[in-house]
Length: 271
Image (cartoon, rainbow, N blue to C red; front, side, top):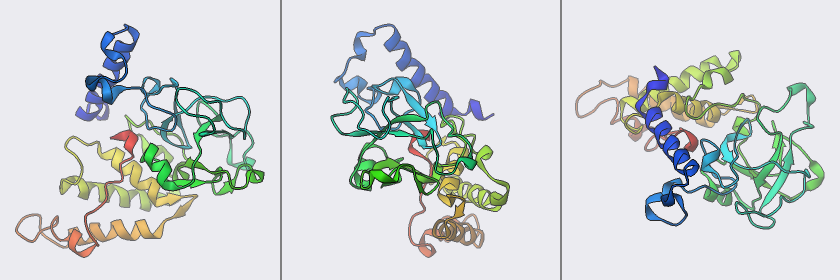
């Protein structure tokens, strides 16, 4: 069963231990120690699994992107207050209370108004978390949320917009698949099966998490991304043309014919 997968059990154990240490005032949980570096609370914008991973205590699971550290804010479209998790002017308070197209339904997530990192380039966003896909004016399904802000840009992940939030432990992504994109979802299942078979995925990786990331790259703003579609289809079809074993096989040949090593699309929050 998915919940019994070794990766999920280890992750749950690690998170549980971190929370227990914090709750009990473990003297080893203070900042700076080499033994605690991997569990130190993270700043605003960083990838997280739950509130205990964040300085702010808030890990937002929403359709804005993979779960990230944030906090609620009082005044939309103004700079968030500086704090331990972000410096002066480093975050913007965005609001999804009034969407560009009300017909899309309400924004899905525990918060509809929250702080996100400001940025000048996608590279700045990726320095905070590999999950961020773009540095752009605040948008939802391709439409600016507040056009008068002009050049003020924030980190965001457009491929998640309009999709039901997914738990990065369960990777229950199938619920986000619209019927008209069933073929694309199946293509992602085949691609991740190829990655697993050829040991591109880490040992004990959850296959569903790979499929989740693949599908989010495949369908953005209800539009199939042809470049990603064609790229993964090459690996699938080339793999199928060769035997499983032998010096020339289903794992050795696709990288040669498809432009290099295949990419693992698993979102960082699910690794």
